[in-house]
Length: 409
Image: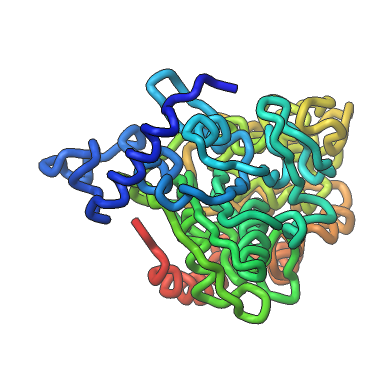
């Protein structure tokens, strides 16, 4: 346990002072000066929701609190990053339990690996898995809680499962009369929206809502959209509070200080993820089992006379049994590719056109990732990337208009 930062008596006085303040705290905080041009903002100016205790401590005072979090649930202190769990405990917040999404609380499990309930070794708090058979908190798991905090770092892609966890947590909170407080964080792919809209007959844990592949929303905005569009079961509404960021704009480039999951190690992998994750629904490896996860792609079945880059997937933390383990894969190294502001379909089409057996290229998971059967059909029919993108335009225009209602920044 880290040394307590504040004594209880000071904390209560602090909360009382904050709760009496004007709710418009912009002028009272040490933020960007009023004479600074917003265009001059950088990612270093962003204050994430978890770093605004004067806003959320009054909401937690005297309440039993749970947290949905993982290794990305950290806050910035002068001494460095510390975990939100440790910070809340140091502030005498009555934190009762932690709920962990895919990859676990400490973020080391493989994609799709079963996560067991247990205790956090650092704090002794009970940890309840929200992955596998228990994606939605059960009433007995929420019993005794007044408030649930949701603080996960998203990467802005529909198939990144943390937004599906958000849906189920909101639904459980609504059903059990528990307030949900989302600590907002930047979306590193929040500068664009792109991709096919999910058709609800293809709904799964890697896509639950009729949104494009890249949605351009922060977690707080997405939670507001879930409520506003009545996507929860029977249209129920979650008692939702969003602790907004300060000095954030969707156009700001933001490099995450902590890996959001084991196979997204850096800004390049996160930027390429919406494009390369489609390979997860094919017989092509997308870099799992290498040190360039989601920065390379390759397969033993791709034409080695066409693709001159090779690598061999190995068993690694976060990818213990990667696709084509121990086999030479032919493909492309994209680790130095320029940053994208749209999905790149050329690599997927190129791989399909240069594989040994096209009938075995796609698997059933591809439709779940795409959210539609049309993308596979379009590629198989020989449509170009430009032609496929043209078919996305009506859906993206409609989504863009709906998205506007929920933007906070």
